[in-house]
Amino acid sequence: MLRPFHLGWQGPGGSGARARKLVDDVISLSSSEADEEYARVLHDFEERHWQTEQLFEERYRQMEAVLGFDGSELSSRRKRLIGAYFCHEYTYAAAALMNPSIVPHPDQSGMTGGAVRFVMSLRAVGEGHISSIVFREGIALPDGAFELWPQSHFATAMLPDNSLTACVGDDCAVTLHRHAESTLSNSVIFPVTEQQRGGLEDLRLVRFDHGGGDYEWIGTYTAYSGAEIRSELLRTRDFRSFLLEPIIGRAGRNKGMALFPQKVGGQYCMVGRQDGKNLFLLRSDKLERWDDDGVLLMEPEFPWEFVQIGNCGSPILTDQGWLLLTHGVGAMRKYALGCALLDRDDPSKVIARSSKPLLTAIDADRFGYVPNVVYTCGALLVGEQLLVPYGISDSAVGFATTSIAEMLARMDATR
Image (cartoon, rainbow, N blue to C red; front, top):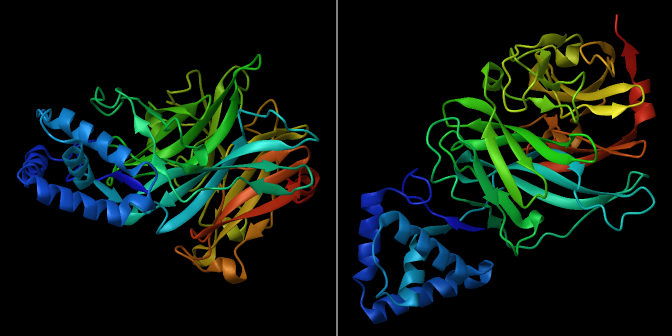
């Protein structure tokens, strides 16, 4: 994809003095030199990207606003050439693709026979080991079959609105929107704040029911600054505009928080790994503030999870209780997926859990960017079937299907 090139981490503008010198260098070119250079840029890149020249123009306008110079006398071609110097090609999933999450799509029009249109998010890792959030759309059927919508060769970065300019301090929220002519499957959310500059990691999406048919799609993810982590929220109602805001409170210092899809007992609930090893249940009266240290929910009990356990996305409500997908880390840092069943009314009570792994890396799935890892950030309930997308050694994504009945049969009552 084509995206802004920053001379330094200074938001959309790059470092001021160096950026202004670059603009002056382009302005100093003669008309023939500028035309020749711009023709070379178009020859190399025009067919490789969507709306290439429009993106050059947009990037020029950003730089003009940031640097505060008057370019009214510049030709359109020279402006685009300046914009091109502040853009670059970026392959956002060149290093790794992993940790999918999946939720029902806001648009379920035309779905019949129990079919569910879905949105799947993934963590993509590109140059510099920077993690971004990408999406795929598709349709899942009650028999376990599914179909992904096609994805074009072009992708666009989601754009921040004025909230980014006004973002001062560590606790500000920003709003992003995808290009009006770009599909969700061809849109990417990149880090936009200082806290996120090292990456957006492991989004766990859930369709949250506020009651009365009022749904909001909320994701919990880890914002990595390059030195520190914290949990943040992604919030949207249409997958066109997205609010990114920090989780306030001491619980937000940890990774891997998963929100329940509705309030339980009048409170918001999350499952998190607050000590890096065990699972805890947290409660809060406010969605954006989590000061609760939580109550211990589960500890590693079986050899395949002795190192640590964690959640694999938001709990799923069934007639029998809350179904929680888990992961465990065992010998040789090998990952495996398991599950547990929590009480419907009091999810701090673990009714049953799997003593054996449900899914683990074998054969070719053991090889990749991070070997011996299977990992998911959420599953989709379609009728009585679960569709579980999962990362394969951080290098590909596979899909598993199973029934609720089979999952329950794999669990043993807790002692």
